[in-house]
Structure formats: structure tokens, C-alpha cells
Length: 336
Image (cartoon, rainbow, N blue to C red; front, side, top):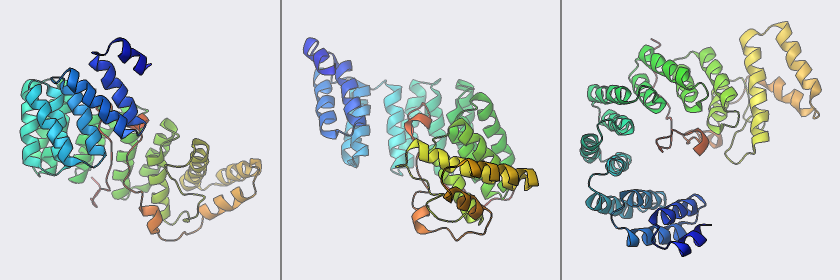
């Protein structure tokens, strides 16, 4: 379809751009490069093509090439707020926070109502240790778009990292009210409660998140890691979660974690009967051993489990701003 379209309209840079993005998503970096270069030959002033091309180079580890494309893009399309904001995000990732702040300042002048710019600006300022300034930027972002779940999550994480758990809870709660099916919010909130030592609250939030997104590797893996640390499960493959697992397998891990949650919540005779009834319905006898192990003290967290602890949400569960969402472990904090 793309090839036929370009043959019919060889000057259609939007079509070439779209085709390049599809090739990029398919992992065909060389073809994507050729198409991006083709689009820029036809329209060297299209800032969005420079931005997408730079993202490809960054993903391929070519930081120098990505920066060169972003610089060329801002020179060719100097009023493009999205491009300046992308430059700020890029420099933030490279740790060049002073440069990032300058980029975001330019973007905010060009697009004072562009919420993602203010949000990313706040993240850069937090990384620079300028917490009051970061708070101002997050508040400005929410004035621009009160329904920005991404901003509420970023703002909440900053407050959590600073030990301001009450404020963080309020922000996470607002985000859940806006989008009760948005998995990254449950993930961030649950991790905060886990770090604060409120494992029951964390378990309930993981449960709600998995209900909202049953195939979320991030939620299932982090929930299983918490239970492993607490000694409620062992480190066998029965509980291991990987991005390579099919949805059906992820669902089985989710079922086992849910049964564990019921046991931990009540530990009543009725709950035990529920678990045993569920076990009897399973075709494979090993399911009984899996839940039995959930009630025994498990081993310490092995390295091969920890290896995937910092991971991104998939495209389906990432924020619409285009940012990959990675929620790092929070430092220990006293409950608010």
C-alpha cells in the first residue's frame, strides 16, 4: 500500500514518513532510514520527520546521529514546539539537564498550553534537584490539561521519592479516577505502598491493575517480586514472568497471584475451600503444588528474577505522550 502510494504521489512526504515509522516498528532500521532520508529530501523543513528519524537513531544507539538530526530539525523548523520538546527529552535522557532545561524553556514559549512539554520540563527539573521549580511545572501542566494522567503519575512519583506519600496518594487517586484502566498508575502507586511497608495496600493495587490490564508484564512481574521478597512464594518457573511469555501463560500467573491475595486477605476456612475448589478444577496436578508453595516461606530473590526489575510498559499501556514509562524502585520512605 505504501509503495503504491509513493509511486502515485512521489512527493507525498507524509506517506513516506508513515511508511518509515512502520518499518521502524517492524525492526527494519535500514529501510526506515532510507524512507526518512527520502522524506527529508522532498521536504527538508518538516520538523516531525527530523524528530522521528532522531528517535530511530537513538533507539539504534547512535546518540551523535540523533542529536545531529534534532539540531538540524530545530534549524529547519524553529517554531515546532514538538521538536523542541523532543530535544529536551533527548537531553534529559543523556543527563544534560542544563541543556534540556533550555530546550524546554524554548518549547514552553512556543507552546504555552502544550501539557507534555510542561510535564517533561518538570521531570528534568526534578532530576536536577530543583524540586520547587519542578512542582511549578507539573502544576502548570495540569492547568493546561487537568486530565493528563501522565502528568499526575510523574508528579506523584516525584512526591513519593521525596517521602511526601500523602500528596503522592492524592495524585495517584486523581489519576485512577480519570482512567481506572491505566496500568502504569497502579504500578507506580503499588510500588510506593510496597516501599512504605503497606503490603496489603500494594497487593490490592496490583490486583486492581491486573484486573485493568491482565496481560501487563510490568504489573505481574512486580507483584510476583514483592511476594517473593516477602517469602510467600518461591523462585520457580510457576511464578516467573517474562516479556516472552504468551498471554495465556501470563493469565495463569495472574490467577495464582489472585488466589494468593485471597489467602493473604482473609486466611479464612472459606478462602481455603475456594482455593482448593479451584485446584480441583485444574487439569494438571502440579497446580496444587503451586498454591501449596504460596503459603510456605520462599527463597531469596535470585539474580535472574531481579534482572528484569526495571522494564518499560508495552505500547498498549504506555502514555499517549509517546514516552516509554519506566518506574524505578523508590527509595525507602516513612509512611505519611
